[in-house]
Amino acid sequence: METVVEVRDLKRTYTVTKGFWRREKRQVTAVDGLSFTVERGEIFGLLGQNGAGKTTTIKMLITLLAPTGGLCRVLGYDTFGQERAIRGRINFVFGGELGIYRRLSGRDNLKYFGNLYHVPPELRDRRIDELLRLVELEQDGDRLAETYSKGMLQRLQIARGLMNDPEILFLDEPTVGLDPLGARMLRSLIARLREQGKTILLTTHYLPEAEELCGRIAILHKGRLLALGTPQELKEQAGQAATLEDAYVRLVEGAV
Ligand SMILES: Nc1ncnc2c1ncn2[C@@H]1O[C@H](COP(=O)(O)OP(=O)(O)OP(=O)(O)O)[C@@H](O)[C@H]1O
Ligand SMILES: [Mg+2]
Image (cartoon, rainbow, N blue to C red; front, side, top):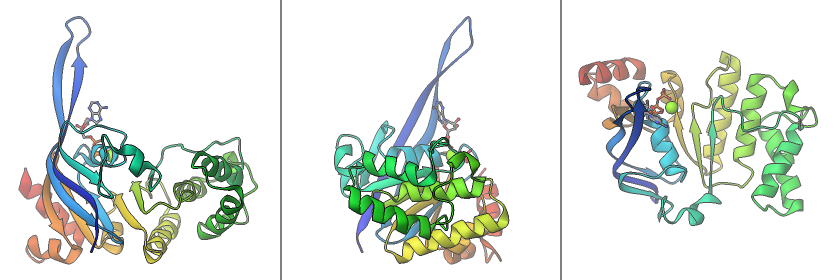
């Protein structure tokens, strides 16, 4: 086993100003002493209610946000201070967010991002063909992205996230807003990525999805770790819950 993500006593506080006339500064603790590790090759799920701290955690892991405390390491490097050693070896996709140029074709989008990562042209074009096939867009690669459905855009985003052949892919709500078949297609794509040896850390609010895909799951609650284990272990921990969803509800409700 090789630990590729290590978070220990991780903290992140935001300072928010409220009020217009009398500006008051207030601290919001989004992540409050979180610890877990992710091993190479696993699909690891982060679950938790809105505001639990999932996206904040991911942003710290992908080197976009500085922790206010604790240890945050990816591939053995600190995400803050050694980010240059990490960035080329990971990638991320935020569901529902537009990381795609709509006035470019799917293929040209991938070219653009391949160039951004300095992928040599020959390898880049070969990879684009492979990825379009992988995300089932080989027929549509030359259409403008603005003509794509939400599901197609989401799959193009995943292809974009794979252009630098990352060792770890971070997916924040990858299936949000997709119809059941589109979401299923994306799940089978994610499962295929694991077979290719990728490590994946994902968030979702759709519990059956987490149960189907994730080897291990961390449930966050108010920035803290509420439970961690395989779907089976979480169900047992919640008193032999029938499904992961039942276990989740019991654990989170029990935490308030
Ligand atoms: N830029 C910011 N400034 C101030 N507070 C923020 C900021 N980003 C997030 N927060 C706060 O931090 C907390 C955690 O937010 P975060 O986005 O990490 O939650 P989440 O688990 O991803 O939720 P969701 O499931 O809704 O995406 C929330 O209370 C949120 O309001
Ligand atoms: Mg979020």
